[in-house]
Image (cartoon, rainbow, N blue to C red):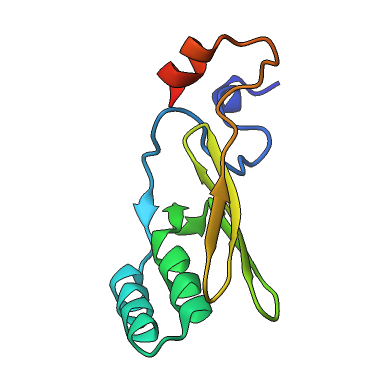
Length: 118
């Protein structure tokens, strides 16, 4: 056994978990954001959100962390966003944006706890 590589990651990490993330921004972030803005102005809503999500993607050592996953369907854009330990899923149509994230799961929670979390 070689002790020099003992502390190296054995399997590649897909997502960095924690309260925040220390990663690089997309190399073409500004270009993608500008394309998003132009698409919104042209009323191409799904294209605009797709460019916007791509501009928010995080990288580590020039490799994507895949923290934002999008799937384009005919009339909607499905998305999953990983930020720290949070996972946000949803979809976008030309008229609506729907997103959800599970904060905690407990059937017997008191109303005061639910209000505190919100």
